[in-house]
Image (tube, rainbow, N blue to C red; front, side):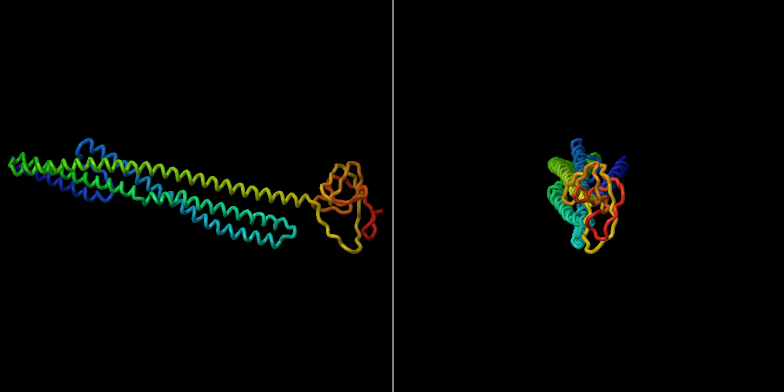
Length: 348
């Protein structure tokens, strides 16, 4: 029987050593879960709480790093966008200045070149917002002392917990020794082991509360700060796109307006010296037209106008009731051709 007891005691010691080897192998520097025995139910709950908080802060920090990485990429692309857009703005303005002689494309280029300066300014403002409102606060928290201090407390608690578990196995071993041989020496060693176990339990309780409070505070701050920075990034990007849309909307409206003005305005005909042989025709006014400038000719339905020139732009030039000017070609209908003298002048 004594031989069986000694063999059982040796087996327990071997199991305890194997457990400690596993603890040392997987303990690492992080806060790890453990399947070995716990001290009591309170300690188990504390351990589970710390494990949950440790995992939450780790995931929160990893998510913050992903946001930082994305914001850094947005910023890098933004500065490249500014560089490219600035070059395009300069090229557009240069083309507009060099081809300014009533050229609609040149005018559109100038309009767009000026607008691009405002677009790049908005991009620069957005980059600054990403830096000050997103990158700086998140980087500070990722590398901040509160998070590291709280995690170190949790790691200290994890190591102390492993030490307490080892001590609990030592108490079990001492109890078996006392049952086998209740000598004063074995009893004294058992009492010492139990005292050390109680001391570890007391220290664990204090350190566990401290670590839990620190991690809970950091976790709450981490969640709150990350949410705020994410909202700031969304609001900043929304504002940026709205302002860009407004700028481009104004550019488009100005370009279209300029195109319509060019197309609807009477053509400018340069006067030529010397004789000119041409054919005039008589047209009847079918729609009333009210002149809006000195170059235009007012017409009333039923009037007859001598048409002297027809432009591909949809305007015609002629004379009616002693006045001359431009009017829409569609407002008159041709009636007959009128011969003219070799020299432009009075119509017969």
